[in-house]
Image 1 (cartoon, rainbow, N blue to C red):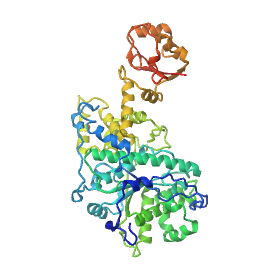
Image 2 (cartoon, helix red, strand yellow):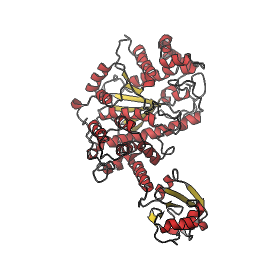
Image 3 (tube, rainbow, N blue to C red):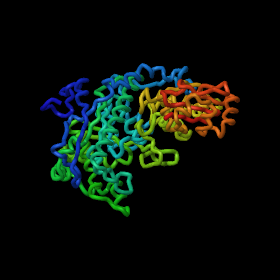
Image 4 (cartoon, rainbow, N blue to C red):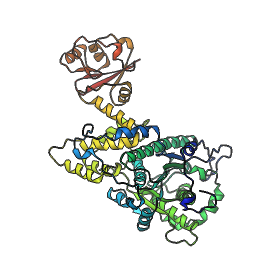
Amino acid sequence: RHPGSRRGDRTAIRPVTAAMAHAAIRPLGFRVHQCALRLRASSGARGPTASARCVGAFGFSDAVSMKSNRRNMFSPRQTTSGVSVFATRRVMSTQATSNRPDVLDVLKQRGLLAECTNETALRAAASQNSLSVYCGFDPTADSLHLGNLLGIVVLAWFQRCGHVPVALLGGATGRVGDPSGKSTERPVLDDATIERNTAGISKILTNVLANSAAMAQVDGIEPAGPPARVLNNLDWFGGMGFLEFLREVGKYARVGTMMAKDSVKTRLESESGMSFTEFTYQLLQGYDFVHLFKNESISVQIGGSDQWGNITAGTDLIRRILDKNETTDAGAFGLTFPLLLKENGQKFGKSEDGAVWLSGDRLSPYKFYQYLVQSTDADVIRFMKMLTFVDLDAIHEMEKSMTTQSYKPNTVQKRLAEEVTLFVHGEAGLQKARKATEGLRPGSDTVLDFETLDALSEVVPLAELQKNDVVGKPVADVMALAGLQKSKGEAKRMIKGGGARVNNVKLTEEDAVITEDDLVGGQLIMLAAGKKNKMLIRVV
């Protein structure tokens, strides 16, 4: 904003160019001294404050390549669903403000709206203006998980309805730890771990928001405002001292209100109690909203239903600090969405066994895809509504098709996996997952490359053998040596019966040998004995 302009004066906002956006992409590199609230930054280690990243509209390479390939992704020739209604995606046009869809209606219809601080006022504001909306992500791990994806989905729906999404990294709040939904205090992470986690989550948010923007453009929805941004609250908390925090923020907080929060009452009643540090977390998150409202013109905060107390702490602080008359509506709104739960009521999280990570380094696109393919019939329609951008009419048709005799099991699950994998891992990730899935299909003739075989090493039994025990040796001998068959004789009978394959190529000769050309990438071979019994051989 130009100096002297008032908040909300859109004519005073300078346009963001691609050069400005790329100049803002800088590593953070912050270190913070430990103290009561861990708020004062080391004066010698503070980096540049321009830590915002602009994504989505400036053409990240993966997002750009996605557009041309995805238009026909679910055409009748390519779709895995087999249901004709899946071949098209009906979407809402958001190009004209006068025709802007009601984002609250969209969220309600898809089961993505739990509570709202002032629904009537927010609905009116959203219909008249393009609002900036943010969701916070604390760096408690180096990756987000499937449960966190709902926050990004809701941001994406706001963007599709003509608003501006902002993802906020908790570089400062992550040093304290959110007590919401926790029965004990979170372990304190060291600065190096937090910075590593922050970098990992920033990469995920940047990529997923870019994928989201590209998917929207393919669906015919052009950006109605600036691109999505990724900010870090260490930028404003890093240099703030404890006394300054008490004076500028603490004096406006009311202890009675803070203690009335469900997250606080639950912990105070527990055996472990609650530390002062955790008790003040809601003020830190609340001040995030104050800062963003005042300096970035962000008027809506979203979060999971367990964040309601922290979100209302923010709207309350805005009213007390910035609205001197303390009117009931200062133009700041809070909105929560339900947590993503399984059929049995268990939530998705990193503390659960087998967490569904969004990072490809933590969980390959293939495994991510397969997890969604294995969704139960009881969950899949709800997940389609909450996690994808497929039109509700199409989803209802899918639900109907599941009750017909002609329905092929897992058809809807495959569509769910395709949509969500594309959203999280982009076109390249989806193609990797598809290729690996096809390569493992019983009796598959899919040509395998090194990248696919390397990805399959996570899910297919792997044996490491010396090169001179593999190259030039009969396939039957190698199958027996690797343990794929009990003996050479059993392996020969498998080959003779037509059930053996090398890299998905069916063997026709009983005395076939493995050649140098069979080593994919000079390292890997996949042997199959029967339709489902497969093994990878890595030569060392």
